[in-house]
Image (cartoon, rainbow, N blue to C red; front, side, top):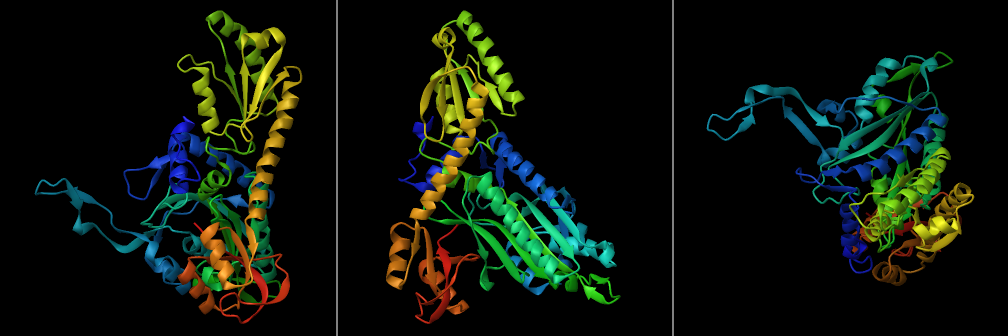
Length: 491
């Protein structure tokens, strides 16, 4: 199967698309710009959901659900917000169809026009803050810590499966606080949760930092982001957390009586990640053989494949295989015994390798005689024959080793492809030759930021939290700079 993949270094975009399609993760739908997430892709999203949901609830958040439709008038209340999303909005204008009398199927019933047009949510700040206005009267009602698992629509013309589609799945947190300090702490807390998830579950090293003013979320005072480096040298924004100040509270007149009896506006945050994380998982770890899934997010961690000539051998192998499978399952390791007779072992090996299953166990008649197993790990493609005593402990340790190895490989790649650049010539050279992360000085002006973007398509991905103050000169303008920022071309 993997031989039908485009080579990663020959055409990265086609290699990525081949992987998504051939692993049956997703496909394009009949609706332009939208995708069908197939069961294997959705099972990875479910694993991501489960871990993130657990992490959200551990930090005090609860889930709720708000309407898909947002009155158009809500958007006009926060000027920067509507400006940021206006070009991406899908709008519902009518609520009924009727048969076309000319025989052309169905048409919109012109008498069924909505009194107020509805926006299909691109994000939910406006509809949620309209509800919060009814929920909040006093400091006793705060904080509100709500998360929503939902779909959103942002009308995209140039799409790519998982990375940029007109409709996608995500979670969006929306919190309300009595003080600025609490809201700012929440914003930092959630970007740290995202970084924890990316590094410890996705095996994806990320850089945390502030967005520049031009890159902030529409309507936010500050946006924090985690940025990851893909194997083609481009950056991918893997999660954002926004300090909204009192902007949405003022837009929707959400006030509360504080402890001193004074009336004040509520402080807000919002934060989110989406199915784009599946695209990040593919682009950061996969190879020319297929997916390489971190064990903590793999829907299937171990597959057991029998190698046999006849039913008698199969029956003998199955007894051992099923015991191993049950022992693994009892230890919390997801496993499958694939004894289908519709495909040969070699086909199965290639299929599970393509789909990134972390560990493969092969058992043949000779293994039964010798009390051995052949274990293959997906990350390195190494195989070894081992005794079947203590197999659960061995597999458990192996899965942890694979998780760490995938992370370390991605970290090593990022380190090798992070460049500290002092002048414009070297900046251009890095972008045109290898790509990667570029740490360089910037004079802090939006004019310079825009000029760099226009001339190179590289943007300031973030101002890293841990970027130390140091004197330098802007790579473009030559003006003084106090610290380096992170540049890259991106998805």
